[in-house]
Image 1 (cartoon, rainbow, N blue to C red):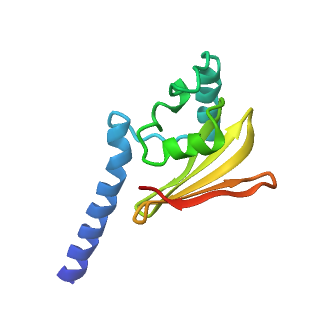
Image 2 (tube, rainbow, N blue to C red; image 1 turned 90 degrees about the vertical axis):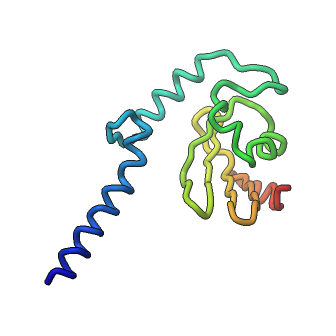
Amino acid sequence: MYKYMIALIAAATMLTACNNDKADENGGKSVQTTDENQTQTENEEQKQPSQTDTQTSPKHEKWSSLPEYDKIIEQIGNEDYTFNKETDNDGKRVFLIELNGEKQYKTVFVKNTNRLKIIKINGGGEVYDEILK
């Protein structure tokens, strides 16, 4: 009986600890992002003037530190793309990249092998598939 209680308490503690990661990022508040909130933020960011190709767009500043960012921009160009993170876990990171609200590219970065795949969604197929150095 006591073993079951200890196991239950341990499981509850672990689940609670996993949920605190998101809360810490938001100042202790647990907040779920919705597509509407993300769209509002993107619309506000689109109102800012875009910079030249040699500089990072203000919209991309939070993504520019990622290891795959430079190769993505090199392959698709530095237009006014919107990066939407679809998945980011221990194994891979997936972005859907939009231009003017229309999905243009999908990128898959496999973290343990540093493999980057860039796929043009509208009939272009695979644009890039290599291991980053």
